[in-house]
Amino acid sequence: MALITYLTTIRFAAGAIAELGEDLTALGLERPLIVTDTGIIGAGLLDRLRAAAPELADTPVFYGTPSNPTERAARAALAMYRDAACDGLVALGGGSPIDLAKAVALGATHDGPLADYAAIEGGMDKITDAVAPVIAIPTTAGTGAEVGRAALITLADGRKLALISSHLIPRRAVCDPQLTLGLPPWLTAATGFDAITHCIETFLSPRFNPPADAIALDGLKRGWAHIDAAVAEGAPIEARSEMMMAALQGGLTFQKGLGAVHALSHPLGAYEHLKLHHGALNAVLLPHVLRFNAPWIGERLAPLARAIGLAHADGLADAVASKVTSLGLPTSLAAMGVPDTIVDDVAAAAVRDHSNATNPRPLKVPDYTVILRDAGTA
Image 1 (cartoon, rainbow, N blue to C red):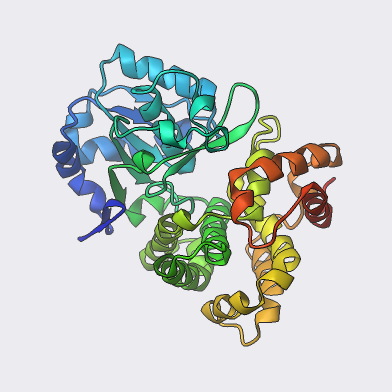
Image 2: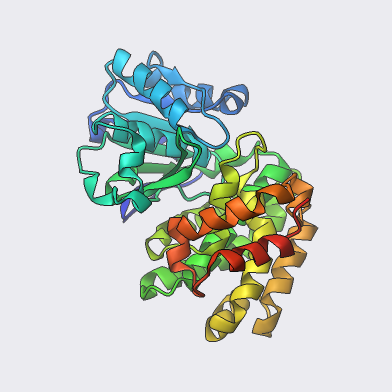
């Protein structure tokens, strides 16, 4: 069993879920709210969680997490948290349940609407260490939310904004690749590309953080080398483990900030009626953002190219596009149902998104419009 302490405490191993009871005890949690979704319950993972930690047999469960978490869902979960006199949270699922649990942990100890704590509204300094404790148990290998300091929430006013604070990092992360074995190939590919995008974008961020750069490159190397095997039917646990580590490493590098891919995928994900998968959006956008940023990141491309086995850095964007195609992911926004009518609004929102500030090339609304058009809206 690998026990890692870096930003938080992480259990990483096949079968790590069996040690969950130790984490509950360490945090003093006696009645946590379990935050998950209907897909996780249907896959039998809630039953596995309770079998591993019998002390959770009678704890309340909120399973109404939407695919892109909302303030409305956070308020509903918070009401359950308070009614049941909970003392913390256990998030079981992909990035959505984990982000929702973070929002509930914030709301349980901080008054006012979530917008007050959004990064772009100056809310980072308002978040204190009073945040309720969260144990994050990822069942996908992609978001890195189990070690991330942000929660992406679609607010009541329709904006998808980030709540960002070191106090939102889950107190414990239990990373058990066995929990991802039943993930369908398409979802494995989409979440896996989210991890790959995190590693690339954080490495390209202009912020100075050599340790994070090293982690990002290693995560990219692992993710690129193993995503094909992980997506295949009957994927071996080794490939699943490598993808979960790549996702973890992507999350560990969030301190550097992301870039234009996420500045666009965040507002696109706020359109609830489109139900756009975050990882698939990143897969579509990444090659176009790499090409657009290329004049500003020349010397940074070579390490990325080496990490994926390329001899020439100028082939990185094409290699990414080819990988997206080979994995069966959508190759255009039109293929995902994104209409041309929202391009202007998305471009305007991207400039305001917190990830825009760490894109290596300064971008304005017309630049984002070009990227969106290149990515092929319907």
